[in-house]
Image 1: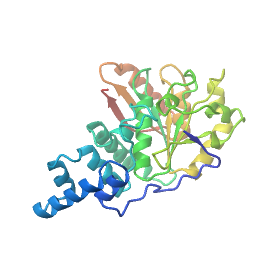
Image 2: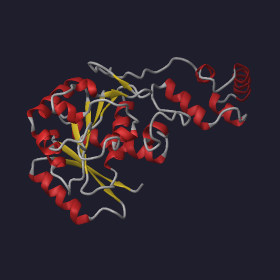
Image 3: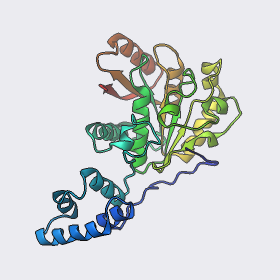
Image 4: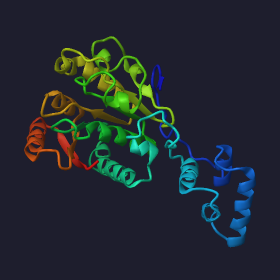
Length: 296
């Protein structure tokens, strides 16, 4: 994981490639030049697509074709052999799966309901009432799909209650360094956010050391200042939160963000707890822009 100073991720950092599928696969070692020539000959004979010919000859897999297409169209994702991140980051490893498609559908709804309704709408808190409902999973994967769309995306782990090394720190296998708590204690700046190799445009700010006063830190002017600075540098800011039924931290974060996405887990979440959190957020003026039923 790379720690950078003065983060300025470029919009549309992943650019489409003018190279052919064969050229891409040969250059990345997935296909030999000899086999590429054989596929081209079969393609001419059958008047078919390169990928179809390669699959028919069993020289490439669908994963190989998806990888080459992602390179052609500037869509970043990680191969299964890459173990730099947690496999729970489905959007990074299996973006063409059913779960990946569902995540992109959620992204589309969030854009329509929040991010595109006002150019100042850049922040979204991901909340749920209880522990173990999948907030971190949803927040992380949503941040990835926004970055894959070319948005300069910042994922903030706002759970200052979790043990060090948990949450987003574990999902993205972040290195040692300052985090959100350090920034709020005036011991670091936004340079504590870390860019994610292989996923251009995505930066992750871990929670940092567990402080004795999370609510007070989140209520300080330093938090508002941080969010203002982040809003100038990023297009989308996704904020993970602790359980809303246990602490008021999630309400503070969501109130500052202006909007929240509610997460519930199938066969686990309690309807009353979720409804109570939703009412508290709405009473605080937070826009509940959607909900996700996590059945993982």
